[in-house]
Length: 137
Length: 144
Image 1 (spheres, each protein chain N blue to C red):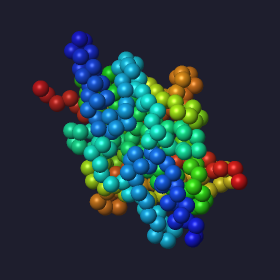
Image 2: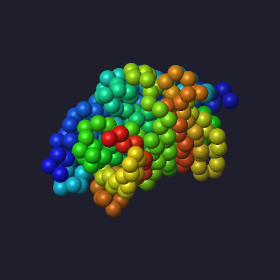
Image 3: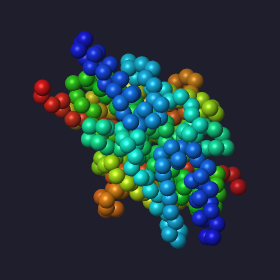
Image 4: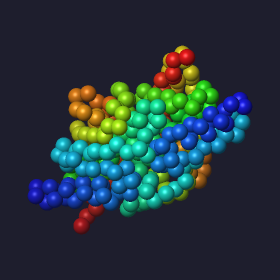
């Protein structure tokens, strides 16, 4: 457990695209919450305005990858096999949060569910299910 | 028809330069028919520093973006609404430092839903790095 926080910090610092989005993450025990502070450049629909659907998908995929790096205590980036994103509500121009639930870690493949929300956890803006390739150990 | 073409060109231009996230990614419009967008390789878009390959998240965004424009092209009289779902399969990593292209085709426009397929590739579409399939809600075009 003591290795989890440094593994997460190293992961967040190593991936340039995480800085491009401005994503952050914090651990409370073994539970990780990812945060995406609002920035005008994340907008995909200026008329609403709403966050770009791709940004929400990217944020949730990175939340899954960050959670896997915590679990595996590895700073390496796991490979994404497939993701399914469900959009539930428009992403408003405000901070977005996400948590990942690692449903299964097999020998080679992990299954992860992620949910993203803004004002209320009970009203998610989007969800993601994905499979990720684990490194050979 | 000419009005449709003009409208598509206008929407394509707006989605390329006036959508903040597309501009931040550096998205370029290659073609509106078929819809092809390009994301040039950039250091700050890298998803795996061990390989220098563009992040899957950037691929997700350009695929979603291409799907949105493909709906306008297939049905200029409807306003593309929100993405309902998007499934992406990652076939193989892109080449290190390679630009990414995303091509999308809207294969069915219903009354309320449009169905779209898209592929992302670095060299040619026959050897994709990722494929996507999505459903999008449609909003009726407001009366003028």
